[in-house]
Image (tube, rainbow, N blue to C red; front, side, top):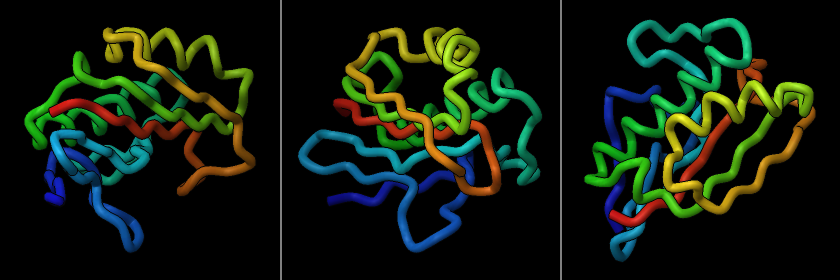
Length: 122
């Protein structure tokens, strides 16, 4: 097992790692839309989805993988009413059209609107 860690994505806000590589598979922790450069969260679902995708991408890149190699994601939305706007951004990044679960949850860390985790081939 290899821990994946990059300064191009926000650091863990709890007792976990940004990601792991195990037997050629990359597992990212859920990425919320925190800008790793300044710690700020953008406003609105489109901007937050964009930042969450960029954070996932940074971890994939650090692991030697890419969006094209993602085969499963789990997405969390604070409001299922944001589903269409979220999908519009998500589709630009997850071009492999991975298997996906998308659920609405009561709250997310830091009061954000979305969180994305991914599983990819290295």
